[in-house]
Image (cartoon, rainbow, N blue to C red; front, side):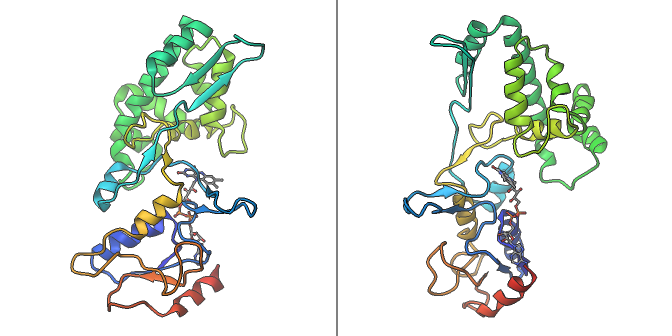
Length: 288
Ligand SMILES: Cc1cc2nc3c(=O)[nH]c(=O)nc-3n(C[C@H](O)[C@H](O)[C@H](O)COP(=O)(O)OP(=O)(O)OC[C@H]3O[C@@H](n4cnc5c(N)ncnc54)[C@H](O)[C@@H]3O)c2cc1C
């Protein structure tokens, strides 16, 4: 029995069911998915759907999607950063996206060659960390130093440990950016997002690291948009093929409900070819 249909609950349910267990997923909310949900939150524009929990897909390991045999359609935000500067028309700006040559051109034109070099060095280091840490995401978590020892190339081990334990400001200072605006952009967008913290606070380095660790197709580190909103993620998991030899999709909704807006009672793999009783719902709501 799995309490909660967030993406972790749904993935666990699929894996356990495919391993032959009878699985029931209980959900207290009106919609499945936990933070991976898409809703219609605007009464005046009821058809406008919106990701009301998390909003980008970043750390979903591609290997996990392969194991589950599902494909989540993702789109790249392009550009993913816009950095304006004070002043009138013609003031420096940066539109950072998938076109690396254009990004470098803008960095050189509006900022300085030293900023281009700093950015190149930082991006190369992030790419190396992304590559080294790839197998760690689905492995049992280890203490930071052991993670560094096991997965990270020797030259970057201390960088990794310092990032995880330290501040984004200290990390960015290593690259000798000349523009404070660029440093601020990186610190705010990747180091401080979702945190009640300042750039000098320990832990913001870790936030910066994970926001550059996306390995989904076409990501190049930056987090991606799930096409159709984050509810696409939970819908795809909920509809994933069931265990071999069993009927239909592995996760089911209660009879009569219209996906996903109405209150589900419980989902179960149809071990006996039918729904588990809706009363499965009760314990979950009491504990919730
Ligand atoms: C503001 C914010 C923004 C975020 N943005 C992103 C983002 O853009 N991208 C990203 O990757 N991560 C983001 N995160 C982190 C992400 O939301 C979490 O890592 C993720 O939700 C964890 O998934 P989960 O399945 O463990 O739990 P959840 O998504 O929290 O799901 C838990 C589910 O369990 C249900 N539940 C709880 N208790 C009970 C009970 N007693 N009985 C029945 N059901 C119960 C809940 O209703 C919920 O549906 C964000 C987090 C926050 C707070």
